[in-house]
Image (cartoon, rainbow, N blue to C red; front, side, top):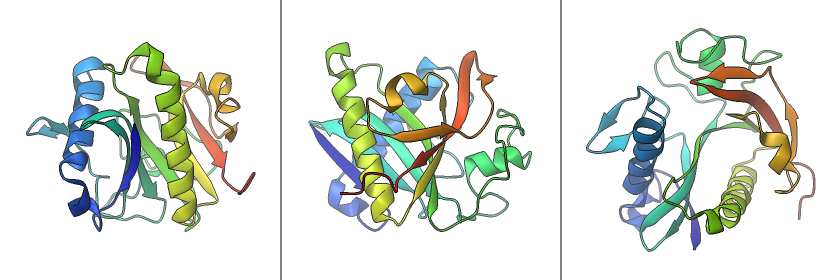
Length: 195
């Protein structure tokens, strides 16, 4: 099992891995969750898949088991910045605008984590290990990119597993029901336990 962080600068070194991440996202979000998202050539994508972002994959033998997208909160592409901020600004119909307790940050040392998934085909016996690999690589990559904090919109069950993964997390917004799943914005402190 491997973890890889992909950027536009290094994707040529990883064959079809970025395409496979987008294919796995389609399977997770469009096929399984039945979300109405853009897709092309069997891949899910959106306006935040730009050269500013990074994509993290846990993979084995070409199969993507899990993934995350990291986007700087300073990103700009047309009218868009990053998903949580754009939702707060009322640009996204599918996410309530009151998702955060305070104004969405635009800071070089804060990155957003989005499109988090563990593939439905990942065996239950591997899921805990895959999740740990995913969080470890996300934390390492975000720190390497200069992040002191990561902001994410994730299932509201996060308190159950945050400590187990060694993450210092706190609620950054209210619990919201989105597509029949309770979600909540969280802030992950990356300054604690630096090695």
